[in-house]
Image (cartoon, rainbow, N blue to C red; front, side):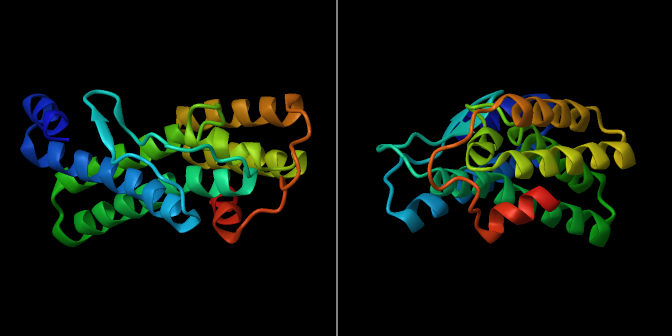
Length: 185
């Protein structure tokens, strides 16, 4: 964590570096909290300068619903960190908080790509085809209103996964409220 802080500090200054590292830490702790709720063991967050951080599971998650909750907990907590930074910007007018909020939001959005090694892939694994299509349409609508290029990539991958994924194992499609909130935001 300190190595990442130092690396980011040399490039962007200490204030942005600290905000970025804290945002990544909060994202990873979202996963840790969800893992502990289900009784799974995992490592502490391990930071990789330039790439972010990760948590290594020490046992396998076999239930798609639990895997989705664990995977999506990080972006949900990360969204909270980005919103907090945005509120700080609104309250203080300091542009550094807007930058931290924007980068934090973008990192969490990138993590929602429905690719197996990212958090969105874990969430998509538990969804039915109809839920995947709803998520894809929601992301496409968000792209239409924001014109953020990452959203169109996310929407295209969502549509591709909805069309190409085979039906999931037992337990898929019955999503907890936290997953439903993700697909509607």
